[in-house]
Image 1 (cartoon, rainbow, N blue to C red):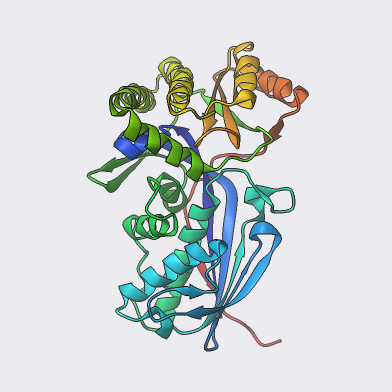
Image 2: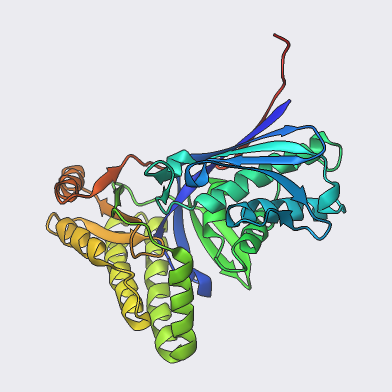
Length: 351
């Protein structure tokens, strides 16, 4: 028997940084999936992943919940295994054995060496958590009920050292387009529909960015200049609220205005923190887009990774994409994925 779980990646449409301070964010699950296959059996754990071009480890689970070897690429696995063991009142070292394979090639380019910035670690955590939860039921250690968003969020935060809002986990869990907001540290999610006629395209800037480094830099600026930071976050919160209200009111023009305003706010935040959140590639892409009347903003922490083109005119969106490609950037074939994480069991049959 094997258990297979698939979880979609994500694109943040609006709400970056401010979501950490309780502002709403709009996030879309996209049709690039992480697949985790778990085969129960044996006394140990073997983890195989295509991250970084392909890695494999025979894992030892410590009584304290630690994983050996303690390599960075195994941290999401460690977080999920530890939380699963706690949920059934076991030591992680006493979990039955299994072989786990993580496939995330569609979220990377350059032979798996470069992340596209689509939330690969969150999708891994979500898919692995779902597969392991089903394995616990198979082992008669837990009822076969889905893991909650809060459990997935906590596991991902543990894997990231307590950083992150969990917005990418929410996209992987729920799928489609959602509004996401932290209230007193707890996630609140509801489905959302973009205004009629609004479509978007995704552009790869050609360079990867470190979300952790940018978050740390903004956090440092918050400490150094709390009043300036609070002012910028308040402006971003208002724009994110406008975008959510535009979706609720099916109002395309205010939604696109909020997108444009948020790009400018991200730029101001970056300047204050001394970070290239709206970096040179993003500036170039924004100029190309605006020449066609198309709105543009970075998706995620900025610096590099991907950007988003938004328009109500299909010809204008296509032309903006052509201009981006003509300038050396790459359009990605991404669309909204309608469902979140899915788990299936496959029974082995005799040859």
